[in-house]
Length: 73
Image (cartoon, rainbow, N blue to C red):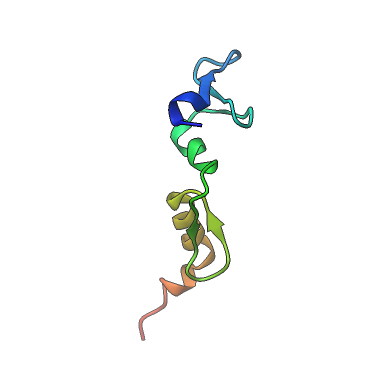
């Protein structure tokens, strides 16, 4: 299903869109569209994978911050 075909306006809330694939109502169609694609972003430090690169970045900052913020000796 294409991006243009995937969403219809929400009946209950004018700022939301309803996904025709799963029925979820979302405000950000682009982000939700990528949750249905098979492309994954893999964490280089553990087995986690995400459908969006920004979610992977947040994961790395939160779970692997010790790899980036080591004290200088």
